Image (cartoon, rainbow, N blue to C red; front, side, top):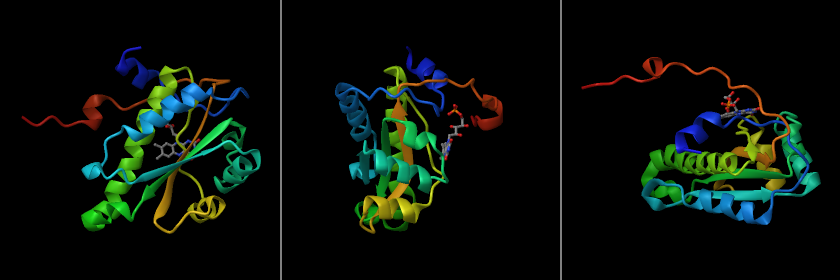
Length: 171
Ligand SMILES: Cc1cc2nc3c(=O)[nH]c(=O)nc-3n(C[C@H](O)[C@H](O)[C@H](O)COP(=O)(O)O)c2cc1C
């Protein structure tokens, strides 16, 4: 696939087959996470790869009961490390750390799609509850979760705005 095809054909997958993600693919996903850009290359992010059934169920419950979270063989919880990014003051803490995480997640989700895996960005959850479940120190803020597995159902593409609606070109 060309990169643009990968970007356009990736869909949010919310129904997974039960097979585990092979170890070799997990390794590739992890490489995609760590090779993303980050502010000042501070890499203010930490990721938790959750395979434990009970913990996945608890994560799903904390994610407003989005049950597909628990149905995926692997759930990745992505956290911003606000302590690392404090070097850049308020922008670092409030913006850069979150962008560091987002850059990693997007790259990983595109690789996942290219490898035949499916995933979905999950942002709706009770942050405090996720922190408690993972026993996170106060500097780590859960930003998003990504259930990951082989897709059982691929939805049709939701519409997008036209480039003209989203983009202003200034010469
Ligand atoms: C910041 C963010 C938060 C999201 N949170 C959720 C979520 O909690 N649950 C969910 O099912 N999808 C969630 N999504 C996925 C969007 O619904 C999805 O990307 C959008 O509808 C476009 O569909 P597509 O990804 O298939 O192109 C989230 C996406 C983003 C970027």
